[in-house]
Structures are given as C-alpha cells and as structure tokens.
Image (tube, rainbow, N blue to C red):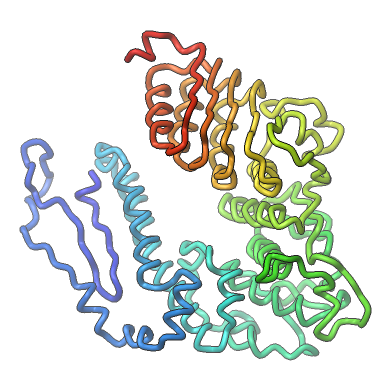
Length: 458
C-alpha cells in the first residue's frame, strides 16, 4: 500500500518513506525486505548553496506571500502524499496505478521546485509582491513541470521583458508559459496600453486590445482551440487582478491611463465572456472555470455564455428557477438542472454567484441530479463554504451520487441543515453521508427520508 510508496521531498535532498518490513506475514513482499535504515537528508541539504536565497528577508517575505516558501511547498507536497495514502492498499499492486501515482508525485516535486525557482528569480528582478500574489499565489505546481524556467528563451518574451517592456514596442503574448506567468505579460500590456494597442499571440496572430476586451468571444476570435488555452486562462487571471484593488473596490477606466487615449473609460477589463465551443484540455477547462468564477465573485464578469446573470439577491434560492437563463437563454428556460447538461463552467458560475450574493440557503431539490451532476457539483463546493442550508432532496443521487457528495461534505464547514430525502441511497452511501455530516461543526439537522430503517440501524 501507501507505506511501500516512495515520496520524495525536501530542499535539495530526499525524505524516503517505505515499508520497513514489520508485517511480512500480513503484507508479504515480492522482493527481500529493505534494510531498517531511515535517512532524512533534507535538513542537511538546506545548508547548501540553494539555501542562501532564504537569508534575504525580502525574498523570504515575498515567497511567503506567493506561497512558495519552504513551509508552503512542503504543505502542498504533503497534501498530495495524503491523497495517495487514501488510495486502497490493493491498488498499489496494479503496475499501471502504481506507475501513475509514482509519476504524479515525482512530477509534483519537479513542478514545486521549478515554481519556487521561477518566483524567486522574479522577486530578485524587482517584481511587485502584491501583483505576484494576486496572479500567481494559486498557480498549480503541475503547470511548471514541462516548463524549463525563466532563464531559457521563450520567443521574444524572457523574464526580463516582463518588467522592462517599453510602451511603444512590440508585445508578444507567449503561449507556452504557465498561465500565471502569461498573466504577468497580459497585466503589463493592459495597464500600459489603450484599447487600440496591437499585440501578437505567440508571435504570429495580430490583435488589438479592443478585439478581446471588454467582451471576449473565444470561437469568434479563433481562440477556442487548445493552442491558445494557456493564454486565455492568463488573460482572465490578469483581468481579475486588474478589476480588484487592494481595498476591494473595482478599478474603473483601467485602460484609460498609462499611455492610453485620454478620456476613455472602458470600465472593468472583462465584463462578458463566451466560452461555448472551446476545445481545451481538461486541466485548462478547470482553470478557465475557476478564473471565470472568480471574476463573477468580484462582480466584474456579468455575462457568461450569452446569459446575463440577473439573479435575485435573496436566501433560499432554487437554482432550477434562478439560473434559467445561464445557458442558451430561452432554450434552457424551465428545464431542470439534470436535463440541461451543465458543464464545469456552468456549475462554477452558478456557485460563484451564490458566493457573490452571500446566499445562506441553497435549494437544489427535484432537479434530476444524478452521479454525473454530483461530480461537477462537488468540484465547486469550495465556493459554497458560507452556505448553512443545502437541500438535495428528491434527486437521482442514489448510491453512487450519494457517495460522491458524502465524501465532499466536509468542505461545507458552515452547514447546519442538510436534506438528502428521496434519493434512495443504500447502506454504503448512507454511512459515508453520516460520517461526513458528523464532521461538520455546526450541523443540526440531517434528513434521510426514504432510506430503509434497516439501513439506518446498520
């Protein structure tokens, strides 16, 4: 199981975790048991040359703000280790599963190291800590796995051009950097240029700012293909950063200063976006969904996929009514969520609006939600941490859907009332729901109507 699985971590060293062979009878090994040695060289490695970066207090403080300090790096790494330790022990006997997990943990370590090295270099180059924190704080380590580093040439955009850009010169928005670094280039372009400023995407296609902002239509502009997915994510991240100042108020006329035509007022940088038809990787779809949701929470993005989000500001919202116009307007009106075929973007936007309006109650009852919808719903639960009442009654969750939601319930830390009535869950799903509910600090009510008494007793 996970105790045999090696997890590599530390500064320039390794911390090797493995089964010391204490239970050979209960858990036989195919090869001879390892020696009882257990060595940790991470602490010794921190005394090496790379440790010198941590003697600069400004660099240390900046790394902490961007979440690339040693403590943050180790916390991120341990989260992956913990996920692997939850994997069923028998699964580690499957070579394909073992190889996938091994590749993941090693890739994650490489990504974390490169992410840390990159942002230390940016800080030394004079990058603004506040800007890096807004744009890069939540950057995934996996984005940096196949990225060799800022010192290597990325077309005409190297680490120097991000901070030494001349307003009158050509700007090339790179396509192959991690989205958070592309966001830095977008940010530089948007805050120093007017609406007619021209730039190139990847060194070839020529655009002007007004082609993409304040209304971004991916398919209409030919940006819906995988080639541009990182640039699109970076653009949304940059717009979100620009739309929010440190005091939480919105920036107006962002494009009106810093060399732009005088008197222009474009409002928030991105107010309307249409993502329909995008052919992005699953990772990019997830990143786009999160970025768009963040824009909705800020209040800067007000129209997604052709449906203006005109939801009422009140508690007890039932999404089968309130989000009727979220996708394709009238064609979706009156349909239940289970019939609409919502994708991750739709769920993210709906959840973001719940957070934006600070709704305390969320009613998803009688929406034909099944296991597929449960998976997408659980991916956006981190936006719903303020919800105190959740009604999932009389859907089609059954055993699989109930299990999926039950395992994710601990995210909803403020939940006091939970209604699972009429979903016909069996013993395993009920057990998982009850275990998840019992870990909620403020829970007062759990409705499991239509679950057989024999199952509840068990």
